[in-house]
Length: 197
Ligand SMILES: [Cu+2]
Image (tube, rainbow, N blue to C red):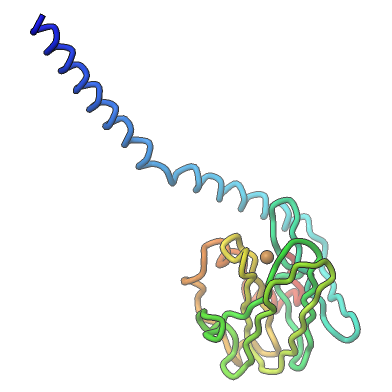
């Protein structure tokens, strides 16, 4: 009887050890499915890009319009890249979802990604359809901005005012990967002037 009891205890202890060891395995590889999801998103993004027609500037009451959209789990601005002349007023127009337009600037707690001497902006949360926020950009150079709730999902944009070399923007290494990947290259914006997401 005693031997049987010991055997049961040993079996239970071995069982616990095996459970612990097996339990650790899958946790170590927890990041793999996320990477696969990210790739799938990137591929569908590229497919959409190739279907886009040449974009035109939308001007309303003298202001160049950038529409802020939420559609099918994506949050984005149309256009995402824009080249305008100094003194142009940009009207950010909320079309769906909840967004902000916020300059990468120390005033907003972020690194400087607009020309030195240019005024920072932050719309705060825009919740209603048709709600808008305007900025007039006078200092030449490259302006990067983001949407506070969706930056990590790649909801960002880039505006070039006049000559990009007047105030070039540094590498986007410190931004979330999706934001970094979504920003159109300066060369592409200068070639196309209006870049769709
Ligand atoms: Cu957003």
